[in-house]
Length: 174
Image 1 (cartoon, rainbow, N blue to C red):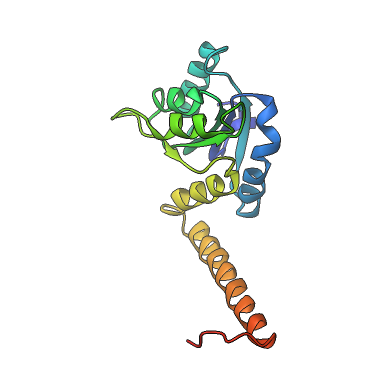
Image 2: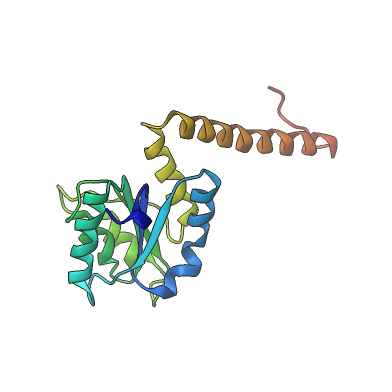
């Protein structure tokens, strides 16, 4: 095994380098939780042989899940899912005249036997959090970090409620 690829937990595949800016929140989430990842740019339509090679590679290297981001026809997540036996999360990217709806439908409407988990259009952050949830099933320290993250989100909501009360709004008491 190539040492530079040892210990990679998540493989992130972009259908185009132009998708990078919309996927950056994913890298922030994975970094926040200490989840190792790698990035590849592979087109399901233009470089299908490279996609097959990558799929064989992730399986043999112990990558635990993949995240594939694509716009327009968004064939990449489904094509990748057809080649691997690990979870694939698809991120539909807003592009073209349908602004991502075509990608959302393409990713979410996979045939039986080739499942792809799908997040919302440009929802890279949720893709990262879904990846963390999946990985936390077998990683107790990651599960603890995720629980802390969720507590932090709840605390922000409670703080907002307190702020409304301080501003004189009739806030529901619980």
